[in-house]
Image (cartoon, rainbow, N blue to C red; front, side, top):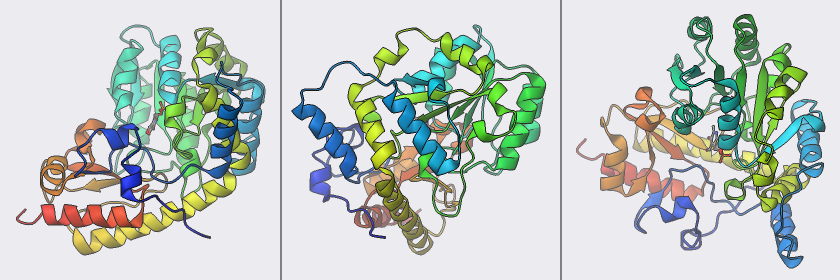
Length: 377
Ligand SMILES: Cc1ncc(COP(=O)(O)O)c(C=O)c1O
């Protein structure tokens, strides 16, 4: 399969998105989770034809988006979604916060598993809750730790699957145990599955709602924004599979679906219905980049330890053998921007997160700069 091309860096630097605007032009940006590949052709066509029609009004996600998601999830994961159980939200962050507003009373604990996507630490207090940390153990869910936490009756558990930043895809057995514990202690699971389409060769994704018994305790959030690079278009979905959980989405602010992006709906429908061959090409490309990163690290930065991710275009690098503050070292001496590990929780000390959703050339240049920055360290 042909790998996806990436435009030259001068062209990438003309983008106006966060990744390409936050740093001076001598810095190679590999932090924020945007990819450098060109948009999938069917998405480009859908957006171009909308512009040509002056089709820039309010969004109409029902039934096109719900049907498209149901078709994709059924084909890809054997996950049968009832389109009527899909609620559109502006993005996954909005979806999690609005669900937590329904689930948590002021000050209620909400369980998360750091190191984890930094906004999880913000979304919980934004909704009035209090973060209760059950850190990953060796990069996996700490099931005994979750059992102890669930026994204190938190308002919810926000699960990240696949897990950003460690790239772990939780196994069916692990998720079955999480559902058993959540059911036993009456803890609703809010499962952030935004990275699900980005599961790489060698791993298998289990949608939480395909686990027996999960429908009564879990809701899932999915979106095209990571896999097809559509974050700026503002469109995601909440999926439920039981009347109990559908009652939660019934309590969301009634205007919620009006707050999504019309272009996000059009692009997401194109992604789910016509963007799968491109997605498969992307996964082959990311698989190759993951392998390249492994070779480059072994050769140029052997003090870095990492576990190649099962999913995503994000690598979680333990650089503690090099520096206690590796992000600053790589930024100041190497002019490479990476996400600082401590943003993902105290467990991220000595780590950085590197975005390999880019060209082989940019990846090679970044590792070269990082290796030179460590000279003398
Ligand atoms: C796990 C996870 N959830 C949510 C988001 C953000 O999604 P959205 O832009 O839809 O809020 C990201 C972005 O990288 C993420 O990694």
